[in-house]
Length: 490
Image (tube, one colour):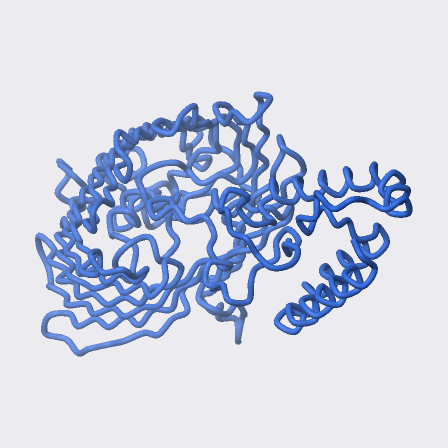
C-alpha cells in the first residue's frame, strides 16, 4: 500500500474510534483504548482492509514476517471473545466500515434495557430458597417480611384493630464449594423485643432455619444430600414455603397454623434429594414434641421445642415426597411419628402420629391449593388427670386433630403482557382440634372459615393483600375479620 494511503487509512480509523468512544461509558472506553493500543503495537495489516491482492513492498514483507505469530494470537483472542458471548454474531453477515468493536464480557450496550439485571430465580410454588443458593456469589443475603392490619368484630361486640409488622426475616447463606453449603434465616417477630415493668413485649428473635447441606454424590447430581441443623418440618405447604408473595391471604391459612403448627422447626439430621425434575424427597430424624404444651384450643402448637436447650422426650421421624407430574402442579404427602413425653409424667409416654397431603397448582393464570392434615395423640386420658398439687390438667389436647382447606384464584392479568399479577381468590378452612372427641368436657367447637380476598403483585417479589374472613364456630360467637397486608421477599 502506498504510504499516503496507509496514512489516510490510519486517520480514518482514529476518526471512527473517537466517534464511537464519544458514545460509550467510561468503562467501555477503557477496553476500546486498550484494543487500539494493541493494534498500534501490532501494526496495520492491509489484508484486514481487504487489500489482499496489493503487492507487498520489501519493507512490508519483512514486517509481515515478523508479525505472523502475533496476528494469529489476535485472531484467537477474537474467537475466544465471540465464544464467550462478548462479540457480535459472526453469522450475521453484516459489513461495517472499520474494525468490529467487541465489548468485554458482562458489558451491555447503553441502548439495551437494564430491566433484566434484577431478575433472580423465583419458583412461584416454592419461593426463593433454591434461587438464592444458586446465585453466583458464594455468600448471599436475602429475606422477607410482612406488615398486617387486622380488624375483627365478634358478633354482638365492638370492632378492634391491630397494626403489626408481623415478621422481619434476614436470610444468610454461604456456598463453601460445590458440595457444601450453609442456609439460615433469623426472624424478628412483632418488630420489637423488650421488657417493661416486668411485662414482656410480645416480640421475639428466633433462628428459623440454620443447616448445612452436603452433596453426597459427585458431579452435579442433586439426588442425595445430607442435611443437619435447625430444619423446618416438611409437612403441609406453608411450613416450608411461607414467603408472603407466594401465598394468598394476609395471614397464613388457619389449618397451616393450628393443625400443622407453622412455623415448626426442630433440630436433627436427615437426607433429601431431587433425582429428577418431577420427584423430590426428604427424610429426617428430629427432636420430638412436648405434650405438656399441647392444648385443646391451639393443638400441638405449644409443644414445639424450637431447639432452645430443649429437654428431649424422644426422637421424631418425618418424611415428605413431592411429585410434579406436569409443570406448575405439585402433589405432596408427609408422614410423621414422634415421642412427646412429657417429662413431668415419667409413667406416660405420649406418641404423636400424623400425615398430611396437599397439592399446589399454578397454570394458565389459575392458582389452586388443597391441604388435608390429621394427627393422633395417644394417652390423652393420662394428660387430663390433675396431678397432686396442681389445679389444671397437664394438657387438654384432643385425641384427634383434623383440618382441611381448599383455595382457588385466577390472575386476571394473565393474558396481558406484564409481570404484574392481580389475583382474586376464595378459600375455605375447616379445622377441629378435638375431632371426634368422646369426652364432652374436652370437646371444643370446630371452625369453618370462608375467606375471600385479593392479591396484587406489581413484581413477583412484592405483594399487597386484602381479605375478609367469616369465622363460624360449631358453637359460640361468629366473628368477622378484615385483613390488609404488604409483603416482600428478595
